[in-house]
Image (tube, rainbow, N blue to C red; front, side, top):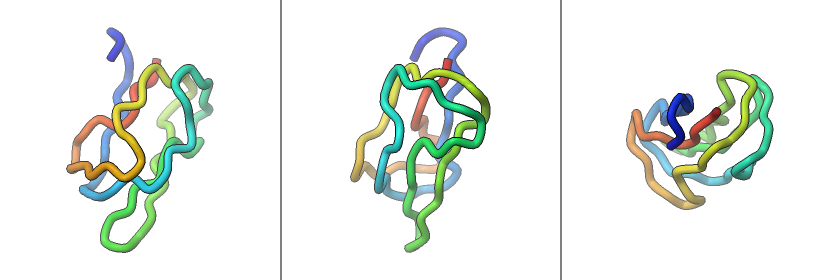
Length: 74
């Protein structure tokens, strides 16, 4: 994770069902970064601000815990 990057973290435990962005992609505030399935509900994880995806820390199908880093924005 680059210095000064903002980490987008998992709000709850679940599984990654899809990733909508690629590393190096410019994103806008509110844009969907990935979809996290928790308790049979699909939750869209959105960008908290405009920025560039500096790294994607998870892969499709991965299980994550609450607070795990998902995407780093610079």
